[in-house]
Length: 346
Image 1 (cartoon, helix red, strand yellow):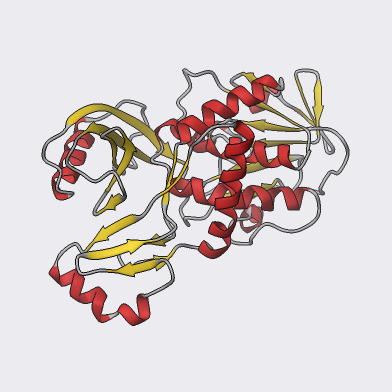
Image 2 (tube, rainbow, N blue to C red):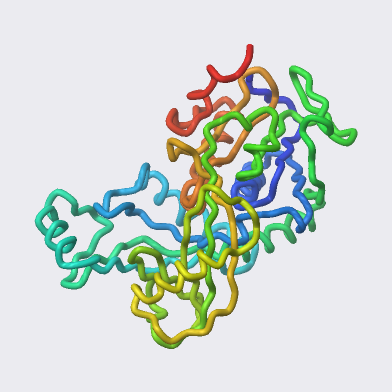
């Protein structure tokens, strides 16, 4: 799509984590926009997010993809946003990875010189990971919604792209308003409900979390061992998370409850009160890379596919989306939907 620089606003579809971050990025750049977000009865997975950001991934303690670029941008972005919204939701916190067993401990220590990076601090019982933490996603979304409402920028509407949008080469009309571009931030719903981008390589993964109360674990750090234990304060913790690829309902499952109870046992927590279960579906992709960019023929765009790493990925890629929209740069080729342009009809 040729980038349209005229003065019409952008329409953002979806105010989950991705849509919210993109909206704030446009707001900070003085780019006009409006948001449409489905009613609360619509299944929004962002409210069930763990919200952890972690610069290290996998059993081999490797740096996450683009970690240096992402984390250089992540910290100032969220701190600036906290000031703008006059609330607190960004919580840097150490993360501890105990060695799973003596065999894994030996394997990692034998390769320590090759594995070590600036985010790791090794101890006898495991590895501390610096620059980790968590984002209170629910707080961010609710405060952001109030902010957008105060500026009359958001409407609660479940949009049907095939019926509700009138699309031409240069602009899109919705409810009597012309927009320069419509950007879809629908999460996993896009795979079934978006006629323009639903054919991309989505691989949604349902996840369930448990909230507990306990005085046993430390509230000073995140514990990560075949799952995570995230302290929220006041002896409340999130325990997660499960993965499932064959059920995308919003109902908690008994099997997930059992799985999370087993994780608590492996994390050394035996005395606790189960408070609630929450369910979400991660908008993951087959190649584990986001879906960011512009339709090759129409004034439409997508900002999606961030999986379980939306907290760390979305601020950086929102800035990249904006740069390409303004004609000032291009989205990273591994995240850009240009990698799928061959799938679009000409």
